[in-house]
Length: 457
Image (tube, rainbow, N blue to C red):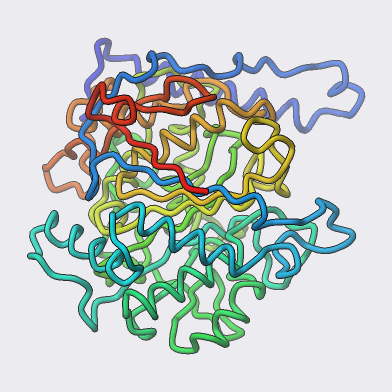
């Protein structure tokens, strides 16, 4: 059960959020004249409630709390005009530079001198910390790769919003097959609620025909994602709809390891959608109705808990359950954020950023970590420093406080996503940098055991 200081606190929060969402829906569906006269009452732009360089939680990783950021402005050169071509095209993204960025990222993350040694260190670290011994990947162990294909259609469309770049996705698969020596037959790439776009599937399948691609519908060489009805999510707020009846893909439950390959986007409800919210494309429910376009792969029942504009700090957030579940965050060996481009919210084209060092150019970056809380904390700080981040309102980092202190979170929620009576421990370390100019965290400053941001150019 969720424990609150006052018994009706959760009910009041739910009511307030639903009323707010209802009011926003009325605004959206109003006549144009009325909409022009009415402005929605949004909270003020988010600023952290906690001071800088005050880490909370327990850092994770080979180098605890390390987040790597590689920035190379020359990797992308799209002119921003979909009439002249799509952001995803090879003529606009330098695939060789994307590969170099990923290689450098892996080496800085692990301290290795070769890519093969970096992957061996990643798999060995995971196995040691999960009671599997000092061993690396072994043939027959499946590796699932979760992409964020929220805007992807089946065929290429220059007007579609941002999803994983084909160039960095191809580089990741090349790394896993040729450096980590993972068998193609042990790799499955998926997004359960969307389609694997031709821009990714066609070149990757041609190069690696043994890799399995799964999406919502299957067909054209892809396979339809299947739910595993024996593995359910149990939410820290037991009043969440379909509690204990929200299921995961078999691609995940059968896997030994998972790579969370997210993208860099804002979000109209959650403020940002990064690694953890990437798993909104990993949940299935029955009886969502014949009109459900997602065919059951529909996370809308979780929207209430993530709506930052209406929920205060110290409240339950379902993202923590996703981050901590044994088959999602519990199997993740690497958190990777494709930030060659960035989008202001989940459904639109990329936009150039104004903040330094981007200065009116694309973000042209890659982020990686072995600590799920640390990487989200860092990228959130980048969003906070960017004036074009229009949806960064409300209690945006509430979920990071809850995750860092998951064993005793501010909300009082009992996070036990497997429903086995074992509550989560800290899922990682959270803090904010000292300032947007120097971007230093407590380990950079030598003042604490929080985040270390390692930068590469």
